Length: 60
Image (cartoon, rainbow, N blue to C red; front, side):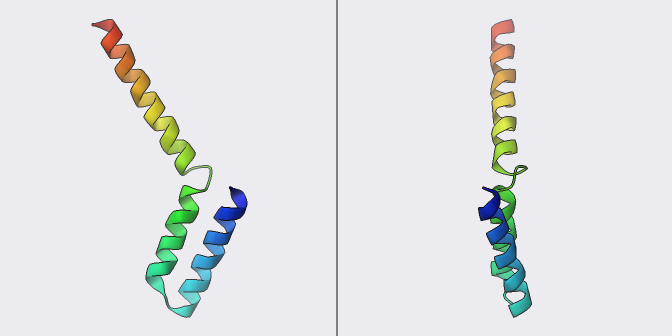
């Protein structure tokens, strides 16, 4: 995952240097999603939310 993230970030930087801002922003977003703070944190947040709902339902 780290290699994919680095390729996306380097590609985004190259796009900014060449003046392609839209592709550069897309590259940074995709690089962020492949970082340890992107998809894994979204998954952890969803799991915590589901556990909270489960706890609330059981307490009723």
